[in-house]
Image (cartoon, rainbow, N blue to C red; front, side):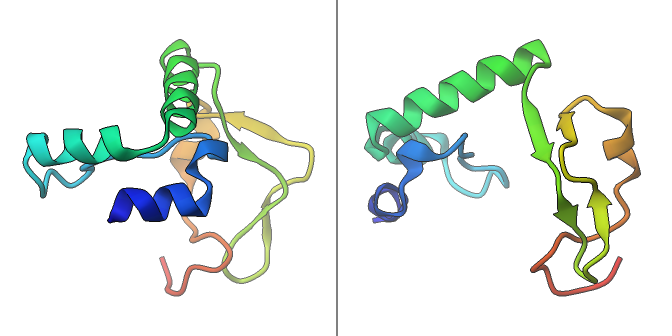
Length: 100
């Protein structure tokens, strides 16, 4: 059921998706779920995974605002997942309710 929702939401156009990040479900259940996701979604996820393993994946592209409306990553800025500045994230992104 969840896989059909991902497919309906356009996972084939997504940069990637994660399965079982909290280790809540048994592996066999997650494997079956992953196999139910459309081939295009799996291919995109594999592409992103390869880029991440090489350290080439741009995980944030500005502009990015925090949940108070302040720009925290300027427009035109592209940050890879290995950028040290990301270790200093002390904010919630736009649309997230809460405080740090």
